Image (cartoon, rainbow, N blue to C red; front, side):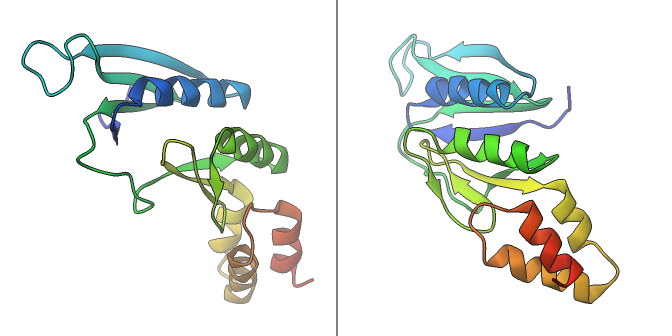
Length: 162
């Protein structure tokens, strides 16, 4: 396990979010599991025995979901970036993370029902954007900027100059 873990702040939905993310990753064919749970004790800002944190491991990345109360809100300034092997994997993650109230944004971004921002990106796009041929990279970038869910075939056509 990495020394670095992500921590996502929720009002009181940490356990539901962790369960949703584990189910989402498993349904997309990725390893995912729930980890440890820490509960609030006496004289805490939340009721004794309620979940303070719950850990989930998604495709090897540890994420700590914290019930911290309404003091802070999630923002698209921080997003989780999912590298997808191909269009079917993009489609699976996209549809799964949008379930029950998620919202598509643009350029491969979406916000799930808990307010967490995700980028669902085919790895081929990363290769295109790093191409030393600036014209090809820019065509791929321009095509991406016009999309909501990323379309590998359309990105490839733009990259190739078609």
